[in-house]
Length: 275
Image (cartoon, rainbow, N blue to C red; front, side, top):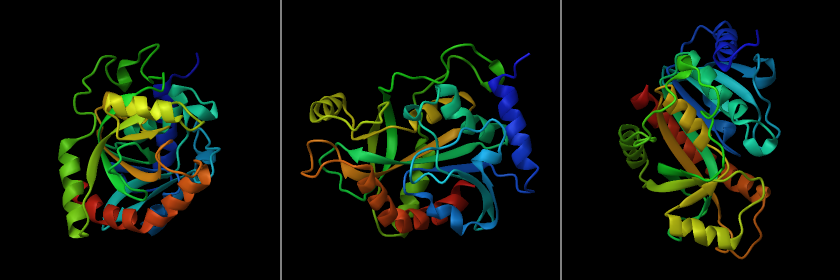
C-alpha cells in the first residue's frame, strides 16, 4: 500500500529528529533572499532538503534548501532556508509537505516570511509588514482531495489564520528596535509571472495590501494541524503599475538581502518571547 502524506511526513520527521537532540516547538520559514538568519543559530545542525525523505527540492534562486535546527537565545528553533512553490510544478500536497513534517516534529508555532509586492501605496520598498489576513487567488487549497483525520479536520476555522497574540509580540519586538511594523492583507497568486497593472488595481479593490506567490497554502496546512501562525512580508518591490522600473526577481533578491539584518534582529528579539 502506498504511504499517505501523514506516513511520509512522519518518516521525514523521524529522520530529522534522529539528526539532532533539539526538539523545537517553533519553526521559521525564510523566503526569497531572507535566508541569512539561519546562519546565526547556535548549536545548529543543517540538513539539506535533498537528504530528508520525501522532501521537495527548491529550484528558485535565493532558496538554499536547508532545514537548520539550532537555538536562538537558548530557545530551540527549526529554520527552513527556502521553500517550494506551486509554480515550480509542485502539487499543493508537495508545497505543504515541509509544514506537515514540522508539525509531526512537534512544532506548535510557525513563522512564515516571504518577499512580496507592495500594493498599498503607503508601503515602501524594503519595509517589513505583518500579515493580518490573506486572500487566496492561487486556485489551490492543500486540503482539497482525500482527507486524513490524522493531519487534522477537513473543515476548520480560518477566522484568525494569523495569530493576533503573536502579532502583538512582533509589534513589541519591533518597538525595542525603534521601528514600526504595519499590518496588511496578503493576496496569493500562482505565478511565476508577475502581475499586470490591471490585476494589481483589481487586487487593491479586493482589499489586498501585498501580493506574492507563497505562504497561503502553508498557512492553511498549519492551521489544519492546529499550529499557531505568524506571517511577515518583506516588500521587495512595488507592484506592477506603481513603479517605473520593470519587475524582476533580481530586484526581489537585492531588497531581501538589504533587509536581512533588520529581519535577523527582529527574529532574535521575537523568538524568545514566542518560544
